[in-house]
Length: 265
Image (cartoon, rainbow, N blue to C red; front, top):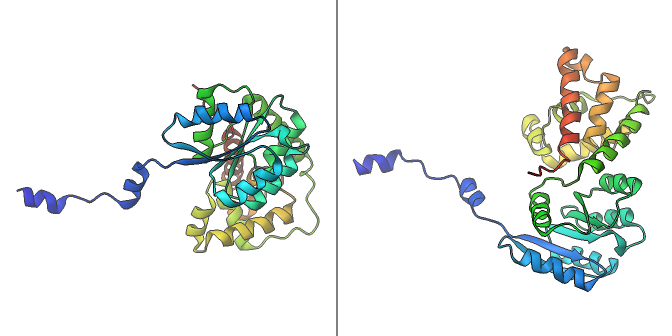
């Protein structure tokens, strides 16, 4: 009887086993004040799954640490440089996979929107509480975003302003069937890897196609692409189902905006 149960039992999948094993989040602290770095490090040191692997007190040290440490998260003080958005662009050029959290004393609307467009994954007050700091680092490391409601509203207003400029179609904008197919997948909320599997190609090829699409349409990300589709009814003729195509694009736009809001209970 025991033998029969063993034969019928299904062994755990390797992916499931790997997912059950906690992974250590590697963090770089970049701040001009040593006492602040010491405090943040002590807070994170209490967590078994978070480890500070490098510290920096200026932009040069930060870029050097990012280039060689292969960290998961960079906790970055905005005041470390006169031009935080440009610094973020340079950092992400050195390591496109690192996820950046910016700490600011007082968030400015223009800088906030610029930082978000440059690829920042979270913006926090410099006086953030220890428990929220730990939650922020974990969520950002897991692929989520961390912005308060005011910053999200700033972003949405910026997108709306840009969307109003997209109502006039660009001259001679032609998209191939493959590009339209990829756009359709994007508006359905599919990730690059899922799109690659759907059409039988690699994730890098999808990224290359999206860059070309963004350049052709004059947009910079998935949300702006969804807004463009709504304003220009881009997918309606292709799909033959206007209501479905527009609903998918609207759902994509709403999802992209909502995804930036952290769930704080």
